[in-house]
Structure formats: C-alpha cells, structure tokens
Image (cartoon, rainbow, N blue to C red; front, side, top):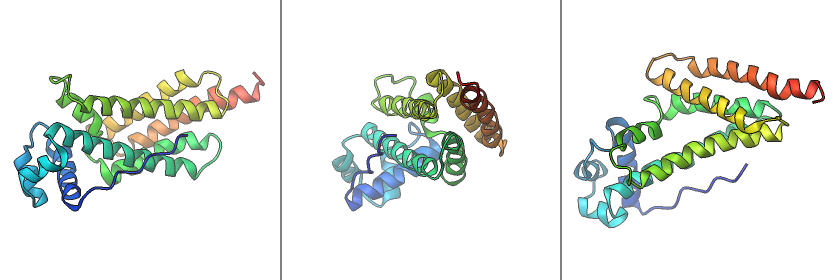
Length: 201
C-alpha cells in the first residue's frame, strides 16, 4: 500500500481556521456555515481567513483533504497490525473505531457530496471522488496481495459493505452495523480467497 502523505504544516492562524472549519463544516454543513462564522470561531478575522486559504471553496477542500489524509493514516495503522486476510478485515475495524472517535454523524465525504450536487464545478468533488476511489483500490490491492482471483469485483463488494455500514451506524443508529458488515466480509473472503487457495484453483 502506498505511503500516506503527511498533513501539510500550517501557520498558527491557518491551523486555527482549519480546525474551526472542520468542526463547523462537519457539524452544520459546508453551505450552512459562512466565513464570518468560521473566522469568529477561530479567533481570527475574515481577512486572515482569505489571506490563508484564498476562498471558502479552498477552505472546504483543505478540510476534506485533511480528513482524507487522517483517515488513510488511521486505516493503514490498523492494517499494519495484522497479517494475511486479517488485514482486509482490519479495514472494517478501522472504520468502526474512526466513526466512534471522529465521525459519529457519518461520512463527511458523503455529506459534502450531497451538499455540493448543485455545484458540480466545486473543487471539493475531486477530493471526495479521490477518497472513495482510494478506499476501493486499497481493498483491491489487499485482496490481490492475498491471492484473490478477482480482486477488483471483491473490492467493490467490500466497499459496498463498508459504505452501507457507515450509513446504518450513523443514520439508522445501529451501533454494531460495522461489526455485522465485517462478518459478511469474512464470508466473502472465505469464499473468494481462502476457499480459492484450498481448492488450488
């Protein structure tokens, strides 16, 4: 798996603005929060916000990009603690612990996508798509490394389980949704990787 780049170093003012924007955008929505509100929460001025980020759109991109980098690092740490097919299941464990610690209201990328559907030119869409593509390709890479005969279709199935679990946990308030999806993933892995090995196919 590729090494995750580090979150770029920010000035203290930019750090305060991005932290405030991250909380506000996630809790209330990108469209619902104005730059005045972000600047006030950060203890800075609107001018400083624009000096540091250039625009609200760029600030939204920075918020989602940092979420993306932090989640990738969280997943890679979980995966790196296991071996064999348990590395794939560790992705589910990572999602579960991440949601408990950072995303109780659900996936910020799905939220942002829904909010910005009316603005297809918004630069945040590239970050959103990139995050979802990374998740699927990361699972495909893990499956391929474990000898899956069809790693890409398996990755689509596993990604569907992850995405559905995140929705169920956050919106339907089913706290064990990710654990249930993990069990379903284990059955897929048993069928498509472990079973494939045992038959010598």
